[in-house]
Image (tube, rainbow, N blue to C red):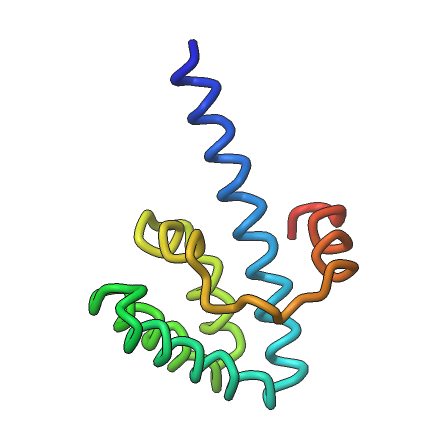
Length: 110
């Protein structure tokens, strides 16, 4: 019973993270100048050994899709276990302000 409750909590958190990353992707596509900071954050986290090489490569693959909006959105919101895990330690911090975050989470799932 406790295991199921924890599992459901994790699923809800992962769904919220996926929803937030959809909003992040849309904001980045509307403001491409913000990508420079995201790329810098990715490289800095890797240099500081805050992420492994596999995560670094996966984030790079997601960022490489940025010129193709549909692919970028699909990559950043993918529901596979690797991308779900990556979103838990996102490189997209600071993209959404608090109002944007709450509006995003209050909106129906897209």
